[in-house]
Image 1: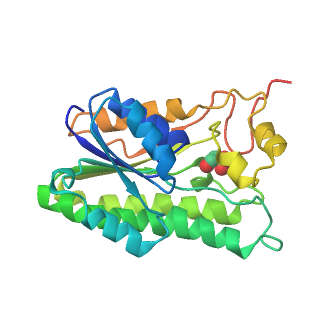
Image 2 (image 1 turned 60 degrees about the horizontal axis):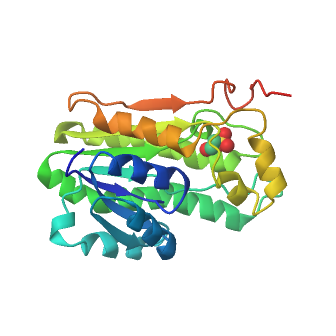
Length: 250
Ligand code: 8X3
């Protein structure tokens, strides 16, 4: 990973933060992207490698393209794009869910991921190499109650990943996705809008994955030999069989 340039969205917390740490330990140079400047600055100070920070919300198309087009020349040759930014907002049936929650999920998890990909691609195309790793979810493999729109967003990530892999097949660019099950991060705090008790309950007795576990999987995908593309990786806590079946400690 030495001297490779890695572009990570949603780097200010959770899986994005852990991924930045994991790649920094391998000597990679990091473009840390997110909405929270102070958090990214704290992360950058912690890491012992060259970093640059880009502040944008992936939902803001103009901000995404401006930030990436204006990267300094020495940061433009991105080797690996890790499309991590994304969130769940609410866990509600269609009939009572809030439209603004739907917009946030579709605009961020789907359109945002597509914008960032489209903006980074020209540099990879001219280099005739690159690697794009998308953060999907088991929510993109099976639909669960009250998750219709979050699951839709992650099904879309899965479909986009597959389509992108087909489109870029002749370009020497690897495309894959990792689909985690329960990962103990801020994810549920955001989904339940700060209802801490409800959020903690999600991870009780399940020995959930940590952000570091997912970062390790991403590092594995990125470190595989050039001829190997880890196309689709589902990562679950051992106690979780799928979205419905888990063996929670009582
Ligand atoms: C996060 C996993 O099962 O909470 O994407 O939707 S789940």
